[in-house]
Image (tube, rainbow, N blue to C red; front, top):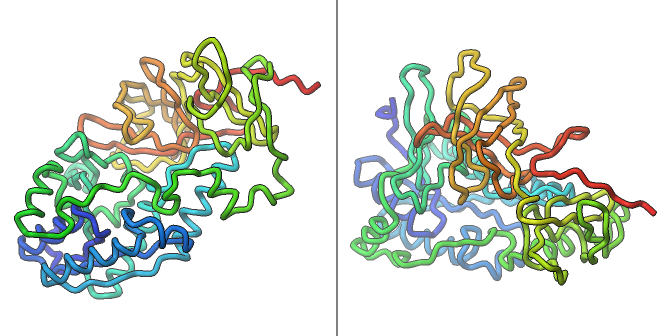
Length: 384
């Protein structure tokens, strides 16, 4: 099916993975171009974040590699779309007490769907990225799906679960069958200046990794009259006050560091209640959960009316797959019952379902009003 593709535009971040992806496609005989997505939503990111894909140095590195490979290079300005679908989404989720994954949101709205649309406007009929994952085709259902990459330490299949069929059928992931070591060796052999460039770990628009400071600076939460005054209270699940916090949006489920509460055992964030500006803490056991509800599920598999199935589920990118029973509720929603308790099942994160190395589907861990939340213990708050 993909033999009909002639011209492929590679999303080149300026890193080693997307650089080698472009080389591999050109070597295979495709007409290749490269494009770097300009996404920075503030001068702070553009000026300080030199390793992430939205930084100025990333653009220059991508351009240098494109020149060396002899392919055209473009820069797409997706700043407005990135602000709406990623930065605003990130801020909104944190203010609701959830923990968003902006990289998945960026993949869902920016790096693939919007990128494919812009590529077609330039005359390209397919796109490629440097993700460590693989696209496969299921002949029985005539649909594409995502498989894990060869390198288990770098596998990125989890972050691709929202991609629609229209993207998958026009997507190449050239490095999915390689290890990171092999990719760097290829880059060195090609004498690419990015061969030993370190991987970016931080969120591209928050190079400091200080999410609370970002919200206060960029969103103005300290100026928002609709939000509770800070500081707020840190309580245990029975309502006892243990300390204060500088704003609930500084915390996430499962967090241990930064609580600054002297206690007889380690404390973890087990719940966040924005309406009360309250952070609830408990033991490591209390932060574990077996049950969660998942919504907005994107299925890669044809279930043919199946209501219940056994899956291996991941609740974070670096989380090990865990056996669970999936029960479909309605279209796009399901409950996941893990065989064993999982630590910090966090509302706002993705939950992805695997069958071996194949993704069956994935969705978002929900925060349903009026229903128990994933990992949320029963607690009593003293209003007196």
